[in-house]
Structures are given as structure tokens and as C-alpha cells.
Image 1 (cartoon, rainbow, N blue to C red):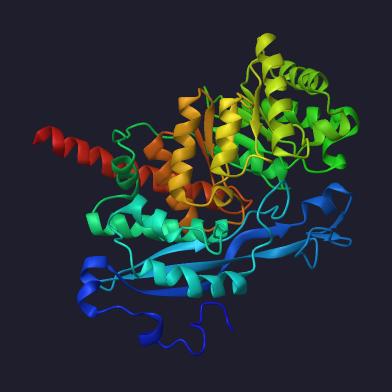
Image 2 (cartoon, rainbow, N blue to C red; image 1 turned 180 degrees about the horizontal axis):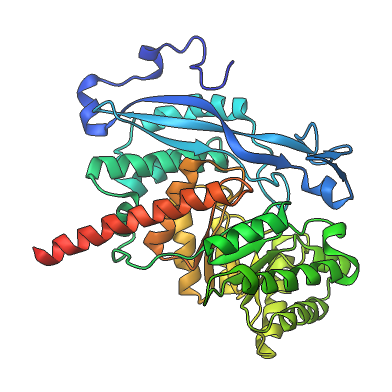
Length: 441
């Protein structure tokens, strides 16, 4: 069955047992699905870590993660459109992250399986909720199916659409829906934006500096070749980025330096927490004038082990008075995981990887949980996402006043920084106008 097509034998009158006089009350009168593309590729992380060689843009070798037919495949997505009573259609996009099936994440995105489950289970639920009540609608639509949670990709895409539906019905922004549901004040502060470089590191670093990006550069340090013996290649890159900001950045430009090393400190230097902390301190000493974030320094194989070891690394860095900050990604996927890491102080900053968290409502909850526990909240995501999911993430990030948010989708700088930055600027302009009108009134 082609993705997005209504299953055979399920005619409209059978599949949608709605009386027309309920449409206005319930607001959602139909659902449509449309196949789509993610903005980058799904990659087999295990095969890459095992030494798969790059040949141009592809990786040569045999995939090892279930579902992958090759090590790198184009990212797919599936759009869900809610047809409201006034015939407005609001959309959300379902997809998984770049390294699907790794680090405890959901398996590789299969649009046909997701489409089938959506038609059978999710659509009937959507037609029976009050879309003006965002959290209530999410809770009802995302109830377990056959004693299992719905796939996180479904929760992510549908929650975006429901957030847009609530905003449309209340004639407001998505951010204001989040503020209202979680009893938060209307935000006035912009959230710092973090860009990621992909493999075109030097060119994209220059782009980030010229555009005055708040947090940079990511670096994609995901192989032994990029990390180097004893981390020397990585350390030289860190120093080059710091130097380059002074060479071509505008006067007074001083970004946060944030590097994702995909567990390579642990793999190359060793997994003992003190050795990991020693290396992070060594890197920080090479760029003393910058705040340094190190994401995914090591992978300890399970969520519990990750919490215990990361908490130790954080404690060592804090005891030494280091300004370097540990950012957790792998093994910290769901809202439940994020709570465990935050309570254990097992990171200075938690990446809330939106497709791995699932519902956008849970992304908001995750930010607030981090704040309650004195841990930084970084609303991230993946290069495999879409313009719609990125814009929705902006509203949640600004509403909850996250510490930083990812410029997404894709691995370039220009498009992602434009999508996220412009959406934030538009949102803040609307909120300023709202505040001014309320003050005048």
C-alpha cells in the first residue's frame, strides 16, 4: 500500500464513524497522510564506529544495525495533516533521527509501517478528541496500543499537528499554547542557536562565524580518523575553531564552542571517568577564553551505566573548577531517561533530542524538568528532520526558555539557521506586540 493511502476496504463511512453534528465540537473532521523526505540521511552508527570507509558521500561496507540495507540511506518522513472543521489543514512531520537503532533509540523509520499503524490506530483517536485542549488531546491520542507505547515518530509528528491545531483554534502562536498549558509567563528572551557542521567542517565553521552563530560548530567527530591518536586531530580542530573566530568574526564575537565527539574520548582515551575528565580538561586548557561543551564523551552501553559514569565525570570537572561542560545525548532518549540524568546531575547540559523524546509536550516537560534540577536544557533533534518539525521545536524552546536550541534540519548551516532563526524572530515579534497591546489595555 503506498504511504499515505487509506487502507483498502476501509471506506470513509466505515473508518470514520462520526456524526456530522460532532465535527464542530471535536474540530478534526479528517486526516491525510503524505510521504516526505528528511533533510539528511539515516546512518548506521555501529558500522561507522567499526571502521566503515567513506567513498565520497557514501560509506563502503556491510550494514550492521537492523533495518539498514546500506550504511547510509536517504532519510524519509511522513506528514500527517489534520483537516479542521473550517477546512484548514495543519501539519506535523514524523521521522526518526540520523543514528536510528543506536544508543537505545527506536529502529529505522519505515514509512509504510508507520502509515499502516497511523490509519488503524491513530486516526480514529484523532477524530475523537477536542483539539483545542492540547495536553488532553496528546494524552488521549498517545495511549498505549496493545500494551506498548506508540512509536515515537508517530508521537512526534502528530503532536506537532495537534499543537498547530490548538494554535489555530485559539488564534494564537504555538508558543502561547505551551505557555498556557504549562502555566508559564510569555517569553521575551531569545534562545541561543547552535549550528552543526557535518563533514564540511572548515567551510561551515566560516559560515557560522560570519553569521554570528551563538554556539558552534558540532564538528561531527564520529570516527578514529577525525579524533586522531590520543585525540590530537580533534584538539587541533578545537584550537583552529577558536583561532578562526578571532580572525574572521565581528568585533566582540565570542561563541560557545560545542563539539560532538560521538563517544570517541571513551573509545580512544579510555572509559575510566577520571581519564575522560582529564582529557576534557586538557582540551579546555587549549581554549581558555571560551566556554567549552563536549557532547557524548563516552558510551557506557546502557542508560544506568551512562548515568553513573557521567555523574562521576561531571563531579570531577566541577571539583576542579573546570569551565568545560558535559552534554549527554546517547542513552538519554525519552522523558523518563532525561529525568534520571537530571536528578543524578549526570550532565551539565542535556540534549533533548526531540524525535527521540516523542511528543512535543514531553519536550516541554523535559526542559522544565532540567530547570527544576539545575541542569541545562538543550532542545536538539536531528539533521533528518524537516522545516515543520524545526519550526515547532522553536516554539517549544522559546516558550520554555531552553538554554539553547539546534539549527535544523540538514547538515548545512544556511538553511537550518535561516529556518530556526527566522521562526524565532517572527515569534518574538508577535509576542512583543501581544505584550504591548496588553500593557496599553
